[in-house]
Amino acid sequence: MLRLSLTARCNLACPYCLPDGREPADLLSLSQRLQVVSAAVELGVSSLRLTGGEPLLHPELEALVEAAQPLRQHGLREIALTSNGTLLTAARAEALREAGLDRITLSLDGADGPSVARMAGLPDAAAGERALAAVLAAIDHARNAGFEPATGQLKLNAVIQRGINDGQLLPLARLAREQGLELRLIEYMDVGNRNGWRPDAVVPAAEMVHRISSHWPLEPLGRDAGGTASRWRYGDGAGAVALVASVSEPFCGDCNRLRVTADGIAYTCLFANPERGLDLKPWLQPGTPPRELEAALRQLWQARTDRYSEERTALPGTHAAPHAEMAYLGG
Ligand code: SAM
Image (cartoon, rainbow, N blue to C red):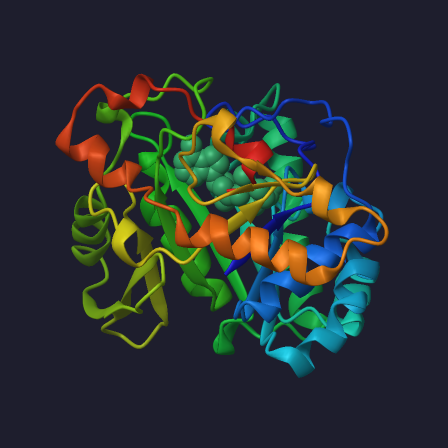
């Protein structure tokens, strides 16, 4: 899978993510982004996820989705978007669908104004209420534009932090059940160095499953190879919930994610040292044959040894090592 970040900027300032607020210099152009996607597809990538920062801030998002459509003939099977949803109007949801977007995951970390405000770095509960209302409207817009939750085309992401929003577990599960959406609960991760991550702020996936299951019994569905989430089905038939346990149950061994930032730096791990990225721009200059970019990416991929999430468990304290920031990497 290729996760391509379109911008490092975000319209929210979630304290657990802490976006920069400013863009890196030398952003890739649309045609350079297309070159990256095309090279990745030639190397066997079948899934593209567009992310950020907040990708809806990027004016060329729809154009990129449209321009990537011919790559379906070369093995690209799906194009997905991860967004906080607050900027997803009905018109943009329709435009994205028409451009050929297959799936949307919306991020929402609370089901009431005060919780949303706390998690999204908003000034007060009223601002949290407005953001929540915007995301609920975005769910409707996406559904109306044809993103069908029942077939996994529309999902909800939530990060859970102990003592901050873990009281939102059941309200978020209820909201997702009512909306017919699969909720993906993400363990709070030590991405970047700015969020003051501490191991005791992580709510392990097993605890989240236990807490939800004591209210609405869950049955395990397992984890797909190369997937990040283990899935559970509600016993009463009200859909499924998924857990991304990259802290408590790392899955480095079958991680298949390549990340490329808005300024064209490729990383093979979400927890990478910022100095360790490969700048793809030298291969994105006019006249450079596409096979040279493919060769550079192949070499990067074959040389990768990252298994930070497993090392974190084995060597407590390693989380203090330098990590690239989440909003820059694109999650
Ligand atoms: N702005 C978009 C959004 O909100 O989905 C896309 C980028 S955001 C970095 C992608 C995902 O990463 C979001 O679901 C966000 O909650 C999650 N995320 C950010 N920082 C995280 C952290 N420290 N631990 C776990 N998940 C995190």
